[in-house]
Length: 450
Image (cartoon, rainbow, N blue to C red; front, side):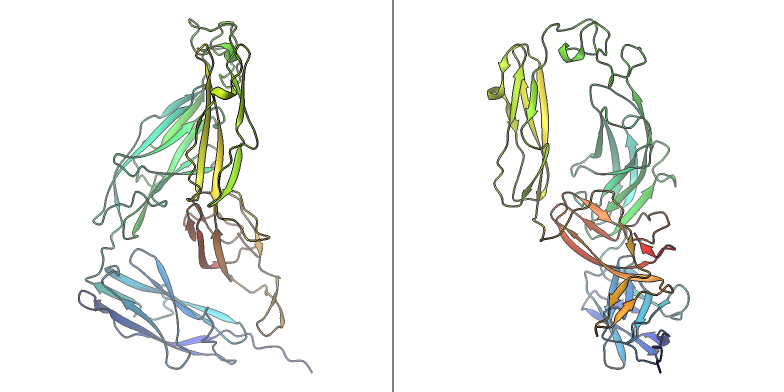
């Protein structure tokens, strides 16, 4: 005779906090959360997923495990560095010894009315405020010459805005919706810059949001769609057509229609000035245009070859601008420049990304790539060796996410597949980081987490 395993999750029977107000101006203060719970197979108090979510005034979450021995207590200690204001319990998560789990939410009243702690005498917790936002151009014509636009912001904060933080940034969107995140200059005025070229999409680009962090980690987000940034939040990109022949400069071989091909014209946008019969030098990159370099390695430049129809081999005249710092992870742009005897200059660039080497078998994902992780129906192995399958009744998944030596700054978001990606991220990183984070994510209607 076979018997099915008990599948009822634990139930919460009590919840309390021993203090609702603490003053951290003198000494550290510890508060205790006590819970009572029942389960037929027994609550697994030693499971790291049996825990409590406790939130700063800014929304930052801390997860605290309960003591294994009764009474089951989770403790948190405040110091003078803790944020002043109202801290709140978000939820209590319980697992039993068979892996069944349940959630009890403060906002749903599951924990009663005693779910907050007021901290007095701690660190400032107010996030930065935006005082001004502007764009220097609302229309740009793209052609042979790159066009740069500048976004300037003003902000105030009691502890100071952390302008060097990679999360202090601006979201800028193509007409298709693809987003670019641009950091601001550290020195005032605080400017974020974006440069358009012939590869840029034609149409209306728009600012999505401005994200600010202060030196204490408090953060705020200001949205264009909510009017936080004012009415001046778009840039129209138009294909430049200097000679009005209905062919954009990016596709036209003679932009100014002076009879001299652009490749032979030192002044391709001015029909009154041309350099006929003298072509610009060409530079060919040896090796790949984008290369990676492990941190600490010596950079060996594959070099370039430069030729000119009139002057011949100009390789020896190439000027190399090399900003690479192999001790610091990040993306570096090398420039190769050569000028011929007629004063015509050509340049090419190579991108070198300094990274920490990956472990064997690891792969890298592209920026913006979405990975669908099947959860429902996935075969798992329990700690005791039993084979398990995630049931169709599962509603959430506990996932460990780690960013390993990325080539640049960015973020990772985990969300239920089948719905729009949320604006909030679960993990932020900069070039060369190794950053882990535990995420409890709802499962999408298709049984997957994205």
